[in-house]
Length: 117
Image (cartoon, rainbow, N blue to C red):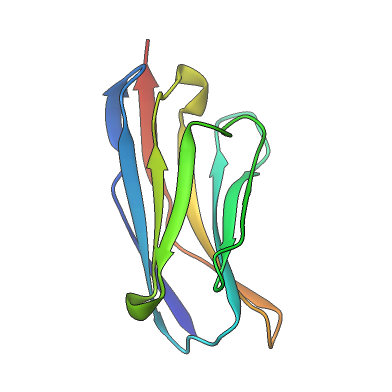
């Protein structure tokens, strides 16, 4: 079992920055992939960014150049630095962990990010 503890989120003005984090604990295996998803009312949950144990990243087109995903493998912690935030970024953000060996995923609790204009 893997537990994902999410921290961060909040209310900011458009153009400001925010960082969310996700600390994984339990049966952590290498290699693995971690990422961030988000969901707003009336929309499907969408992939924001992913990062592998080796540091390979992938981003949704809507956040490229503004968001940066990173991780500290020594403490199994994932980060998402969100800059130049837009009202369209308003959503509940979810942390995700996927074990490459067992090909099984785990979800963290969501954290609300609200961007006002």
